[in-house]
Length: 181
Length: 174
Image (cartoon, rainbow over all chains, first blue to last red; front, top):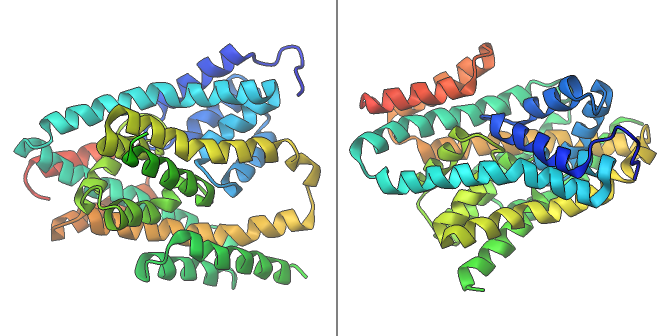
């Protein structure tokens, strides 16, 4: 890979992604962008957007894919591993501590009452994210039918996702090809 | 390897490979598998773990760590997290090395344009299902709707909304 001088080493990748991992509450990607594009200038804004669209396209957690892309770009497989480990290790430990505390105290009436409220709000965050994405430019077209099909198939009919995707993904891509002719 | 660990490894490795557009998009599938197929926990517990992961710093994928932990302790958390990351990481590693070459290619644009609507539908399905799992009173639905409304119309940090939900819950209103 391009081990150009000035490119971050594995230790720096690990440390910077650790920083990104622990700063992000309710979405880490904005923090990753800030670190990569504005603070470290490891990527230009355009390079970041391109990497992001690839990371969204590929299966798996987008932010983890981003760590893989950036790590690979600078230090190959070892860089990818360093970046992913940096991203995941500290938050993993933190969330397990929270989980343990929740198990310990979750049955207290006050805690479970608070958590009913937090769960309701957390659900609202997902709803908002979906609506935000639904209002994007790409959906103002007949292609929106695939969004409706995904909602009906998964939320209402409760099809297994793998089965649904085997049919819907090729159909949707074919639709995009047909529309671009 | 115990049976539960093996199930976690297989389930989440498969999930990793079908999680197009990110892990929140497979929330319905995770819920279906964890609650309905495996019966590892109730829908309410699932919604609570999800809320806990949202309230913690770090990638929201960490809900998977909590599920693993609930099923099989620390080992379960480690196995589930590794399983949900590894397959997609390997794929991303391979594809990121060749993707640049296809910049501007028509099929690349078609794949992007085609998958976006599907991922949007999946995201909306996730919001719908997690709302049903989390909300057990009329006021809980109001909190969910109000949170979504505030996120859509302001730039307020999501953590404040989770805190507000917690306060309303403490007050006994949810």
